[in-house]
Image (cartoon, rainbow, N blue to C red; front, side):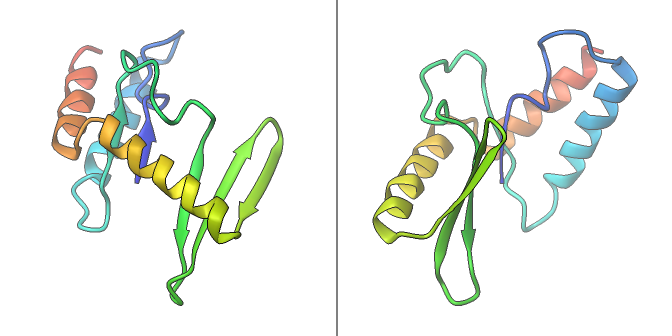
Length: 114
């Protein structure tokens, strides 16, 4: 699971109790064996995820699909050549983001700043 830094807000007003609850929720979820939480730091302005959010889906039949959402539209990509491009972009995003341990450390540090 890849989380952009949006839930880990450092922009604009946010209720401190609500933010603390969000941080605790994320840190708790990161302990699950089927979850890999990664945060994209805001200082990585040129990362591969700037085109918008995507969800890479692998079906039980080993078919990979990509779900895209943005500007009030959604699109499920199933063409193998398009899925391949998006899957490579997703892999690049994961390499540019903090690793899971660093991500949890950042979340815990931000929670301590509240």
